[in-house]
Image 1: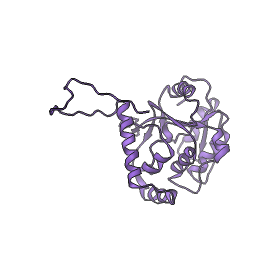
Image 2: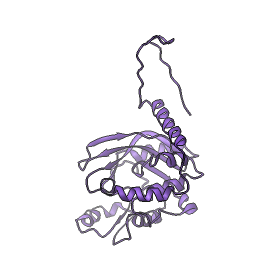
Image 3: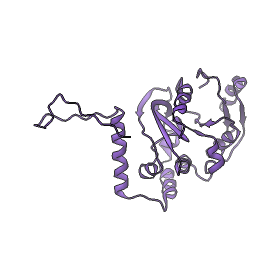
Image 4: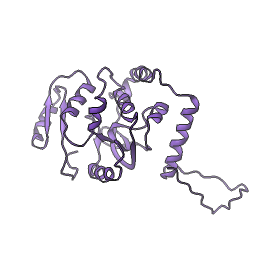
Length: 246
């Protein structure tokens, strides 16, 4: 993450009092950090909030200890943010990776909206998301009462009445192994997601609408290709039928 090639960055590390050698590694790079601390916290959301409150830049993001930003991401983001002046949230695509940072699966996203998050769940990820710091002044920080669903609840609050943009580039990697919350705490995820959605559930038809929307947008980005065999269609086999959904 330190080798991004973009100068105007503020690195903040919040360590929860690790005893596995993490502090020694942090101290090695202390001169390149804006702030760091190693002390017990009240959970992951509390630790993230501590870092976000220390940030002073126009845009902020958080990255978990096992996860990564790919080289050149910040420079790419700065270019894209200059084009998306209306957006308070900008996201890219994400890879699932193993402990050696080898690709397990590439995940493509489309522009998220408040209703698409209600209909489909986490159709974005913090590993490839940046938002304007002033949003925290308007709606607060992560909900520290949540253990697994704080990111989902946060992005729902952020997108309620705000615009987002999607960049068709892979910006982050989420490390997946048996000890991660994604792998080991699905029951907690399910319970918290149900509570987050209580009173704002969407209909079956709304869910299908946003699924179709996502597929069409991914098709438009070139991530989905549909092959239809020649069965006497009014269009000859060599015809290319293209559309653009905005």
